[in-house]
Length: 169
Image (tube, rainbow, N blue to C red):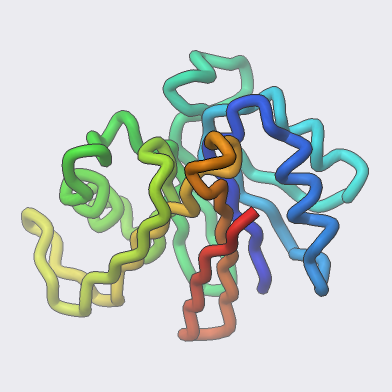
């Protein structure tokens, strides 16, 4: 399964559309980690399923949630913007929440910085000991200013293989 990941578009939906058009293989799904809900219309012509959450700049929107739990290819993905978990200062709170809800992949935004970290089997978060590796991934911001290197992410899931990558706009 091939997933394209965006966050923090902040009015730059055309950048997301350009990234989709550049993909060699059409992704199976797009995940959007908030801050730019109005930009989701950029995906309409591609007919690719989109899962999205709200960010701190989106406010409360009818029908949209701040966090989603998704089951994909044998993995449980927690998709959230990250502001409610204090990701600008630490990822421990978001990792602990992921462990609590049984997620093995966390996709978040908010910091505008590309990020990837994994925690091994046996790592403890509170009373929860990881039975599977836990991956934390932030694609960075596709809508950031040009001089701040706009970025996105990809996730390839194939059985136990979890492969992330960052791409530059």
